[in-house]
Image (cartoon, rainbow, N blue to C red; front, side, top):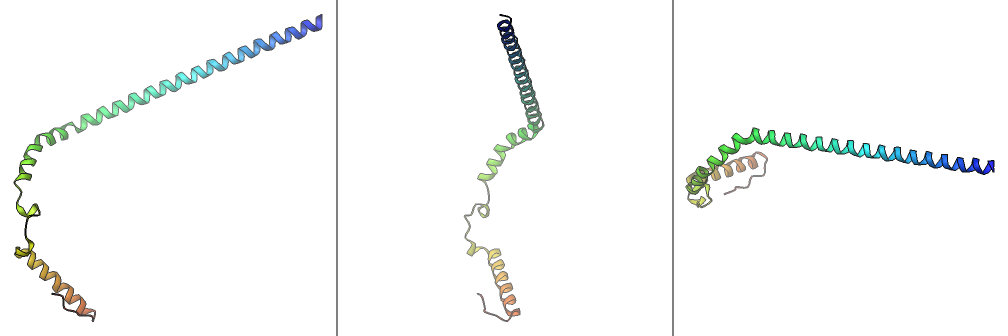
Length: 120
């Protein structure tokens, strides 16, 4: 019987040791989860703080933009035709001059290279 008792005692001790080890692991896992949750909460709080600070810093610019928007819209509706694309460039003397000067520059460049072909 003493051998049976020894085997039984060893089984009980082994079971208790296994239970205690499992309990320690569970406690460690819970502690790690709590630490991770706390770190996540701190990270979110920091990100919120930075977002609020950026909102605070950008507020003056936002306010100016909101106040200026009606004036900009009014100016957009009163733009000269040159800025709206509703101009006939063939009737614009400035365009005709720039076109002629560009063609002259191309002709001179071609002549300097020995391949002159007159561009109109």
